[in-house]
Image (cartoon, rainbow over all chains, first blue to last red; front, side, top):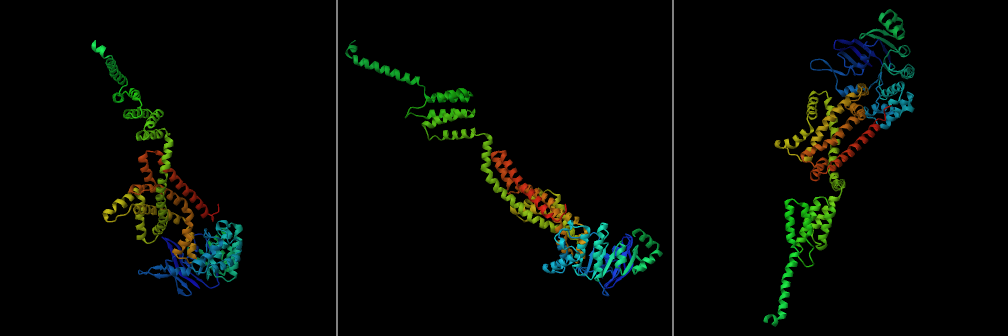
Length: 252
Length: 342
């Protein structure tokens, strides 16, 4: 469905993502783990163009998307409306939720369809109520984010992303900012989504995601994939790689 | 003795005549000439003997009916003025009434009685009366102040928002142009800007009415200030908000309009409220370019009455206006903050 080919991202002389290729198939659940600063979040943000690539290609259904070359042959991001169109197909959930604080839970979920897809408010409202029900927060529809717990905020954020009916969901450390007792509710929501067949890429420190829902686990370090495979293999092979072992020892 | 014997009646008559001729002047001389008294009193007054002059003036008798009352009126009038000048208002009024008793039409006496009444009114009461007299004028002038404030309040936030967005624009030339604009209008006195617009533009072929010049000056100045406040507020919104909006597929403009700018409203209320309160007071500056508003009206009245309470009154009108603003902005801030958990 979406493919990153040999992508590179540099900040000055620091290479955040170093010649990485990632192919995401429809219905696949990919979990990316690795220590902080390993480039996994940067990689995730490249998928929905929140981060520009310095070199490489992004393919959508086999065709190059989102970038063109300027007169000097450098990669530049496509025109805004093209990028917006692409982004609207890809949902993203952030570590710190980034709900719109001036809108109720319901209006947060309605915002994308109404503003971007120009859906009628009635239709958007129907969809939003449906999704809030799905994440178990129908009773909080008129609540402002400031009055929700972290877990509730993250579930609203998931509903907000789903309201755009994305073909792919990106999760950037969705449980890292939560109190331990609130992790479960968000985890369950994401798992439910996985079971419904949603294509997703999850960047996380939470091994539960890797164990319970991953089709593929990728271990990243220093901007490269150092281990990649089905969960069982990665965990059994992890002991052979000193860095992976050191990281897993820390987080498990 | 023939004559004597012959005309005893004539002798008697002659004696009677002599007596009469002697008596009349005697009586007349004993009764001094009123004009003579008036003249001597005037001399005393001119020589500085006010007390003596007063006594002498009072010696002029009231005329009998049909007699000439000129000296009487003049002397009582002068006496009344002397009494007035030494603040003996009661005596002054009594003398005027004495004149009016005989000559009810006398204008001078009537006017002096009015002046006595005014002089006897306490100072504070006179000031109060002045305030009552000029209050409607001040209120009418406040109308202009309010009009200027309202126009600036509508124009400058709108202009300010666009200037703020232009300042954070990635197009260098636009950003630079508005940086210069803000630099000039925030960096020079409003008074100077008003002078420049009103007196400096006509030689360049642009003549503006005082009102247009005032609106233009206030608008340009306040737009610059509000633009900087708004830019700060926009930049203070967490970058994650823009990312979340983008991740939904919003364009920059949609994200600004729906997500970023609405979140600045509450943060903008306190600093913008301050600016608007400053604006109310800054409108006083346009009095220098021939605009009649509250400050100028108060100044003009003060210059004719020297009644300091006119200025107090103007101050109170300004206070009422600023207080209404303070309270309204407080309420607005509370209302805009409903989504915050405090």
